[in-house]
Length: 177
Length: 135
Image (cartoon, rainbow over all chains, first blue to last red; front, side, top):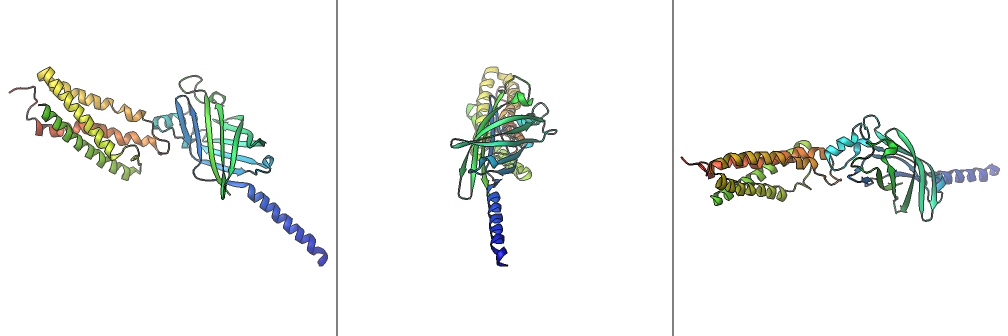
């Protein structure tokens, strides 16, 4: 019986620590997040950010982001612009109700991080790299990142026009364990 | 006549403002849309009085200038400008923390017509007959 005690105890400790390790990396998107976009003549925010975030500062390679944004939650501050943005000329919210981002690789770059993954908007998938920072807090943390996309890559609207083709995206996502 | 016009402008502006505030209250309680952050009580009252005082000055000028035709030109312009002003709410960009901006025009567009309604409702109390006309 004694013979098995230490191996079994070691196995329990190991399994327990592995579970703790995995659990520590899972984050839940908290309220107060901001997914803002801006370009010439158009700016606004998206609500309805959902998804799974697995992130470990010590082991960024093991991180995984799989998040969606509800297209219908767009708010430009103007009702007519909102309706126009959801129409088939732009996001076509009825046909493509979500913006989806799935990471493929997360690396540390100095004091910041960089995630590369597939961004799907309007049914078109493009590889996008997002530089971001992570600030750890007492009960959670906060991700912040900025990047740009060219709306023509996703066939959003017609080329040219009043709305700039390069759209700046500004992310601020508080998370809790 | 200028004094009477201005008095009518101020009183009808206040009436329009009160009607707008009542309407805002009904709108909020029935649809749940709260735009009090951008359509404040003082702002609504001030805008209503400003509009009708401006109308009072226009009324006085047109009646001085066009005599008999001043009344009809004024009425036409007041209604036309009230209609034209509804483009404003459609173009307004609200703060992004306000949800459902689609409901904003429904709140403020009727308010754009309250000054002209209040003016014509109260006008007989101030002018027994149009100032430019004679019996």
